[in-house]
Length: 260
Image (spheres, rainbow, N blue to C red):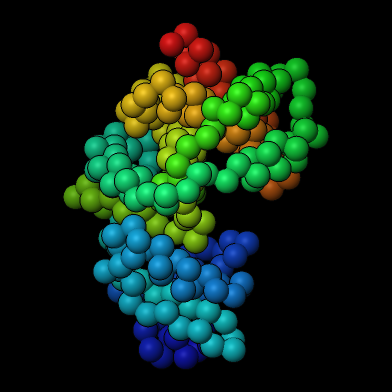
């Protein structure tokens, strides 16, 4: 299949491999080959729902696999240096995205499953995260209508061009959920490139009501727990630096929010 794609699109430059896909690029296009069925059409549909349908060039389903071809964006993953200037455009985009309503309540079974899964890392250092999340679930604080969310807003999925244009990529996880879950993921995965107070204030720009703040706190706890669980199993070489950093940011954010 790669030979055929090279003939159609030109020489392929390998970008990255993930659990679900292989990604290549040419001068004009990005080609994403999926390991699982139905992912190419799903991501194309999500791009269109997000208002990015103009980027979709081709969806191809063959016996050899599934392919999504998108027009290449002239940008790089956001860094601490480029993030500040990208924040206004990113906020405009996410605010628009989060206006798409599902008409149904957010399904919380996945949150409960993750809480159960994370019990094996529970200890005195991270106990405060479990307390925040368990309280929110017990008191029904996470009940809300689902809106369209990206659900993978870490820095590699937010591209910024030299002229400041912003593009959010990798839409395979997108679905209707709580926007505060999206913002918690954005905080821990991207905004934490900034100093702690600045990162939290950038996240709070999305939080408008006391109810949203309660949900944001709970999803921050969930997101940091997910990181604390994921890092030792997937990037053990970063444990010495990343785990203390995640705990420090979690304590700072939830400590400040507790004062409101």
